[in-house]
Image (cartoon, rainbow over all chains, first blue to last red; front, side):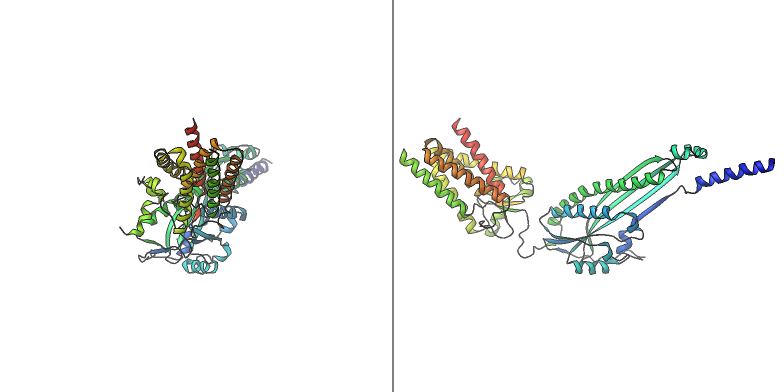
Amino acid sequence: MRFLKALLIITVAVAMSGCVSWRSPNGAKQTGSLVDYLYPNAKESPSLTPSVVRLRPPVKVGIAFVPGSNWNNGLPEAAKMKLLERVRDSFSKHQYIGKIEIIPSQYLQAKGGFTNLEQVARMFDVEVVTLLSYDQVQFNDNNALSVLYWTIIGAYVIHGDQYDVQTMVDAAVFDVQSHKLLFRAPGTSRIKGGASWAGLTEKQRQAAGEGYERAVDQLIPQLQTELDSFRERIKSDANYQVENKTGYNGGGHGGGSMGWISLALASLLAGVAYAVSRRA
Amino acid sequence: MPLAAVPEWLEFDRHAILAGEVWRLWTCHLVHYSAQHALVDLATALAAGAIALPALGWRRLCLILAITAPMISAGLLLFVPDLLYYRGASGMAVMLVVLAAGTLWPRAGKRSRAALVLLGIALAVKIAAEAMGYATGWSDLPPGVTVAWQAHLLGAITAAFTVQSLTD
């Protein structure tokens, strides 16, 4: 009987510890790597021949997400669209940007390289492509309080787990013809927190969404700054040659033009002046 | 320096002004994008200037022009960050039209005042139409150059202040 009791206690203890150890205290990673997409299976660094990048404003820009292995499962479609639209809005504020095309992810092949990028650019008739990539790493560990999970109730009320979600969103702008990176803008965030064993998954999911939002919030102003500084840089950088397309005058040009209507207003004024002079 | 490059040295160039080329605050009102653009702007400015001249005199008129020209340009520099380049005398022309109307107002009879009010309304409607992008039909600017309606508004505001200070 004693033996049976001891066996029962050991069995229950092992079963309960099993509950706790079902979830491994490590982490997860979601990524869509720009390098993997543009330089697949690269064993040597890419050799870029020095060349002059020709930009012809108003420049036609495409915006796309870099395809990734588990990328499409990692981020909701709504969040992807939100980022694409915000990036599009950033570009549309500038007169030297012509049409802006959002390129669906399905058109980009994983590890497609510049060959795939050129095909897509031809299809959507764009000269410059902004590739958005996303890297999120989630870590979770137990802390000292996790020992209270043995009480079962503790697994629901005690915050014995801690998580750390690190996110990086990156926008890299490439000239399709020369394969040259024109500029890039990053957005990063880090969110830490604690949760009970039962609530960890939900908390981590919320933190992942929040981390992404924060990274995007940081990315957009960075992208604006980079766009402005790039516009200034190309004025003095010999590696860039800017030739306006026919009918485009450079943007930001304003004319103080009165138009022919103003001559009618001036005539009216002259008539009043004549009447006033006669009255005097 | 080739003659064709002269307008580029005189036009309103935001970055050049901020880098210290302050003469552009005055000279941007003297250069234009085309002969037609220059003709219409200068004809309006000359007509309005000629009407204001008897009441103000040469000295005071020149002083007003010298002070209001950089004020309009500085207003564009401060309040219109997207405007990188500007050429044209229309800001000054609007200033002179409002100034001329202001000098006529005290001596004008009922009918003349009604005409001046009509002129003010027409000018306000014109600037509003330009701000809403309806100006392309009557603009004499080349393609790619938009009407800087803010210069017209600033011209009207500086003229209103000038008239106010003259009557005080």
